[in-house]
Figure (tube, rainbow, N blue to C red):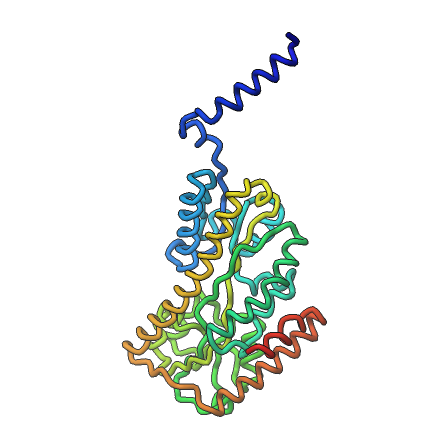
Length: 332
């Protein structure tokens, strides 16, 4: 008997005996992933990630465990996409508008007054997704799912009938897009970052602002803003994605379980977003804020602004942008 035959026989015994190993012996072979997000643990997006991680662990019998690292504890929010692409972490979450400098088609999330409802936002995502997936695949990443934040509404210290009523009002701005919106509306942009919003409201430094009902509640907008218009200016989305090599390294069953959990997380997350928006709107109303229907003239003016922004965005991005907005407007 040759040493080679002994080796083959040894492997045969190992292969047969492997099925007899107790579960504890297999647990050592579990794959552990890290998922980085910049949002705090109490945020509904993070809660959704944690729920997905539990579902993946249960579906794989513990063979794939995903450790969620919230609040910039693993990587800063603006560094997560690069960290996943470079394989420094297996998975991550980022707000899509923050990716626009590198992934131009992700910038569709920042075009205002295009999506008027959650249904519109979901339609935009269905059209946007295959293009984002293609871009991410070229960068060595795989898209798992996306969930929208509650929509951006318009707070005001006084009632509004149309865009003309905003002329001369001090409007909060926190990036180039919101500053440009303020200017086009005839308002005066006032730079107020998220961390300073509550103080600005308490001091009466702004007369109007574009933000979600959720942010309005968190910062007690009723201190100075008595009117809220549900204009649904835009629905920014958080994108969850994984490193392609890490994905390919999973066994087929684990990949299927992760994909299924991601699909479930997307459905659940959109529902939680809508619930958060409704709860916050009710809280605004309880604190004396009037939830006003969007006046006809204001709605018309905002639609025209949206068309202007979308045309400019298409010019900046190029012909690839037509692959999003042409089918979107045809199907909406």
